[in-house]
Length: 323
Image (cartoon, rainbow, N blue to C red):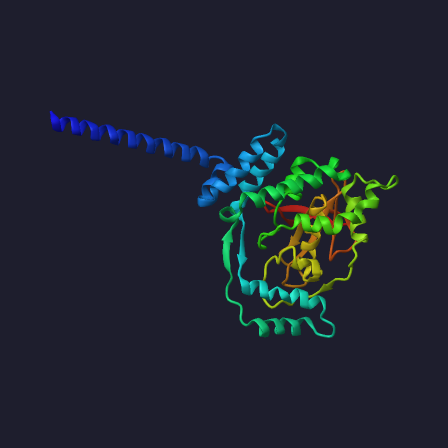
């Protein structure tokens, strides 16, 4: 009888353990059925940071849109990684040197970078979903909402457009950075006279984009496809030099427009018929949803339809073409 009691106790404990295992598996499967649940599962040890953001915006009913925005960003995080390393940042000095190149060619500057810093090793990679903390994500969301709600053209920007073309904290594979406030403080005052205008259509994002580009203090750009390393996207700090390939020039406009509440995207061709290289440019929309493109930071021009690609939270083939 004594041993029978022990056996019954062991069986009871096993049944409880198996029950918890079944509940855990069912919960895991149910969670994996939603994009948010799947993303949180893939965050592993960083899950607590992301859940902290969700709880933060669940506290106040007035933050319901910010909660949805947080969900949108977290759901898309598993698709993004970035390279990092001291040598990678050293090599990016190329863009600062290129800005003050004087009589040197881009190739000479590229060779100088390699000589000064030595050979580049393959950079290490990190995953957004495992690295982004709650402070960074909340800062991005709060600043994105700030410019959307305070700019007069924000009333003509839907929440769906906001999420896709204003809210993203990055462009592609550049290192994570607090760029919104920096760009806002540097360039927002250029739009003061537009916001006070009684003649210009200050509720049109296209008008704001054109007005801003016309008043940039530094309009001098330099194009070259030469670089000391295949960087990917170099980040908000270095694109401000407005030198490099079409990708760097396009990235600068994306950071600039989004920091000031102007929705925009990158359209691109993987390869052109006259060269093996791809090409990137910016597209913005007027208040009626008509698209306008800026190539090499030039005047925004109306587009019509044809098959190209758009870089966004979920890249896709689109229909856009220059008139």
